[in-house]
Image (cartoon, rainbow, N blue to C red; front, side, top):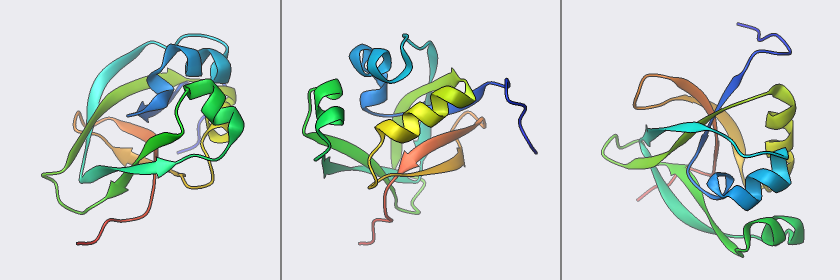
Length: 121
C-alpha cells in the first residue's frame, strides 16, 4: 500500500521522542499521541555520540528497542500521528544505531518504530 504525501504516519515512541524539548527541536511542535505497547522487544542502553541529539534530549545514554522473539517482553510507549516530512525529521534525529521498521503494536495498529539488533540469550 502506498501512502499519499499528505497521509498521516503512525510512529511509536518509547524514548526521547516523547520529550517536549525533543519534539520542539525535531518537529517544531508538540505531538499528540495515544498509549500503546510493542510486544517481543526489550530495551537496552545506547550511548549517544551525536552532539545535536545529546543537546536536544539532555541525555548521553538513550534506550534502544531490541527484538527478543519472546512475546512476554513488552515496551510501553506512545503512538504519534505525524507527516511524511516529520518522519524524515525523526530519521535525521535518530542515530545510525537505530533502524526504522514497521511493526504491529499490542493494539493491532501498524506503526513505524526505531529498533536495534536482536537480543539473543
